[in-house]
Amino acid sequence: MTHSGFGQEEKTAQDGFRILYICSTGRSGSTLTDMFMGGHSQVASLGQINVLGKSISLKAKCSCGSDLSTCTEWRKVFDAIKSSRNIDFIANPYQYRLWDAIALHKVDHQRQTYAYRFMIALRKAWMEGRDYLPDSLRKHFPIPPSRLEALHNKIDLFRDISRCWNKTVIVDSSKNVREAVELHQRWPDLVKVVQLTRDGRGVYLSCRSSGISQPKSVNGWLKYYNRALPLLEKHIAQDSLLKLRYEDLTSDPEKTGRDLCDFIGIPFEPEMLNLGQTTRHLVGGNPTRFSPEKGIRHDERWRTELKGDELDFFNRVGGDMNRRLGYH
Image 1: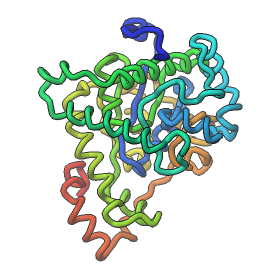
Image 2: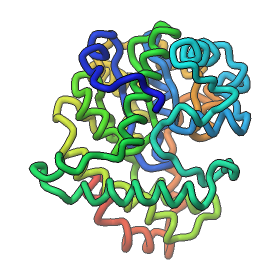
Image 3: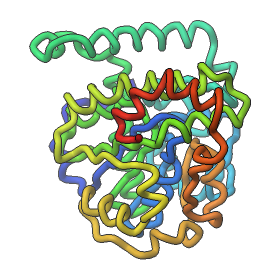
Image 4: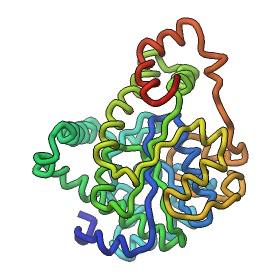
């Protein structure tokens, strides 16, 4: 176990940093939202940090353009962890456990073996079973020890990032709803959650444009929100959950930026509106992270490009959920 001891919630609350955890399905603007917040002088924009180990192992690039293993900002964090934990991120990227993350693209096959996926499936099944339990029983079925370790490791990682980068807000767009819930329940004053949505027709068109089949283009989006909505509603305190639409960010970024800053407790900075003005250090996420100069673009191509059988298919399968999310 990499963590030296649990039960440090009080210490964490005194450290002076907060976490903004973004929950959304893919192709819904989580990377853009992460980058947008990362334009603030007090914010560290991290991307999908749960793939940090894989990204180092596969020699992936930080969004600043350097290899993660040589990025000067990340090296500050890695050196701090090596000093305090004797864990060498570069030599052994997976030693520092974070929450489970299965790669669909750019897979590290030496790590993501059949046995590895099987163990993740077992943990996932246990977590899914807990979702159906009433609170009176749920507390008697704790999460697997490795996942508890991952939660504390993540908090410690964020603490090191806050100190090394001199930031007071950490943005994590790992998008895992169960992790968000578990983090918030243990550190309710520290962790706030953004429920990010995008019109499902836009998500569907984006997937179809990438050659993904009709069922897969809607089923992943549908499954995510069928799981996410009740969990977030039930387990995240009302004042710690912000419901945000991708369309609001792209059509009125200043208002959305002010809402996000108010939510996390920092003053709005106009510099956030210019994505190209700040160098960020995101891990994972879509290629947008390498092109901040493209700025904030409002993409509703589905209104003109999604028609006929394609639109009928989406409406038949995903129409009810889309209306539930407020899209008509």
